[in-house]
Image 1 (cartoon, helix red, strand yellow):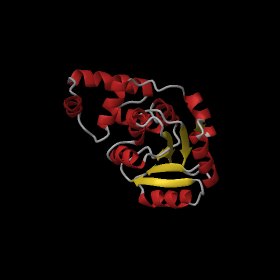
Image 2 (cartoon, helix red, strand yellow):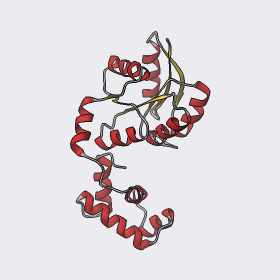
Image 3 (spheres, one colour):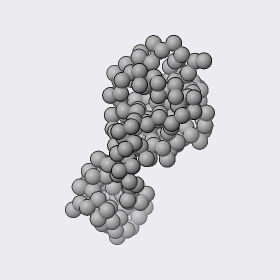
Length: 202
């Protein structure tokens, strides 16, 4: 049985290498390859993949958001997050988005091929070290709105600009920033953003 694959990674060299590598497997067929997250759904609609390998950080739409869309629109497609970012928070969010696999990019080629076959067969496949780290780290303490505010702060926007972008009052944004800095045990929003990024909470 041939396993139809969709690959999504914004780094062209990595994407092409994966296409070449996986196409050498007798039971794999790469039916779509895209470099932007906002092209994943269209590629899935035309290619009808059995398994989608998604990078997390991509332009247009990140891999976690794309995984949630694929889960809702193409439930038969099994999603594997393939990323250099082996962060505990990412794994938890990926599973919440409907991903059934999480493999870091420095895994051996045979391990990736095995993961694809296993998820196609109905299993969940997670990098063991990352699974342990996720359990040890616990859940993110940030609320959805606190995450939104920190994400909006990434560009260096002022509190007033964040408030306008999120349709919140300046006071409410300040309260969310204060809560986020307390929960991350940091001194300001940029430190809170860094810690939340490092832990995969955003």
